[in-house]
Image (cartoon, rainbow, N blue to C red; front, side, top):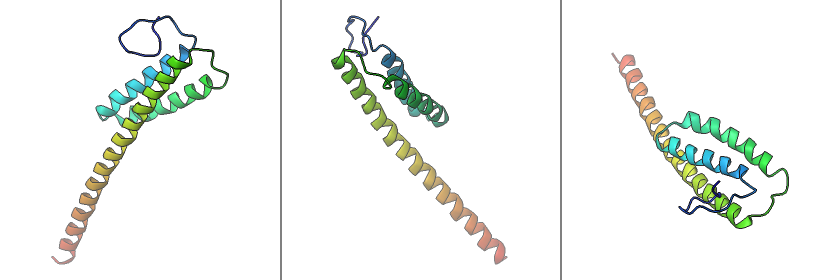
Length: 113
């Protein structure tokens, strides 16, 4: 089994292997966000939150450096997701504003016809 850190080197198995699944889910969320599949990202975020709460409900057993590296990677992924989500929100907002302006133009035309 590999450690939590994906640095190309095989290491001994770690006792916090459950975090590996959480990190893999975060990586998948990043991939799906890059592809614009925000619905799946939202579903996975809910699942990831549950997994994190369960994982940290009891003390973590050793291998702190590996766990710390994995947490840092997940925080980087979260920063990516937040920024990508902001860009998506802004793009949708601009699109909606354009639709509203178009609808207002049509309504004005209809009133003055």
